[in-house]
Image (cartoon, rainbow, N blue to C red; front, side, top):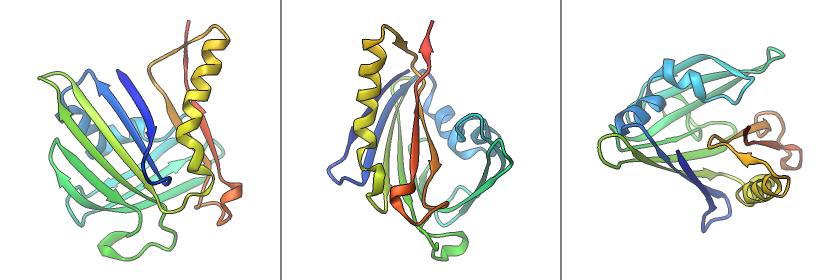
Length: 186
């Protein structure tokens, strides 16, 4: 799997690009089938005991992440656009039935491009409602990779972000914290 990360034109946007050695329908299903989504959506050691997905325009999603101490973080959203095996647009600006969210945080635009029968280019545009401390997140990944190389290690292909504290825990952006996770090889 190859991956890339860049800042968008808008400082609130984050772009992710990855090449998966899986067909587009499999990558799409990882986002749309609850049992598959539960396996990867929460950064470890968190779990996802609940994933209810009505994957259609206007359909609601309800995901609960559970931290090791038992804290449950409910995540509600609505699908704005769904094109099977090609595109998903979802936001937490609405909850079920187009009800406005109290604290909108993110809109996610996912594109799945088949590269032959067994590979997929995955492009994600993560649009945050506010800049807050997330504004430097895209720049943090290259700094982490530089540190890994300077210390003689090799990064594995998997990487993820763990949002330790965000709008759901504090209305003050200066208190939000994101952890970057990059496993090492060997």
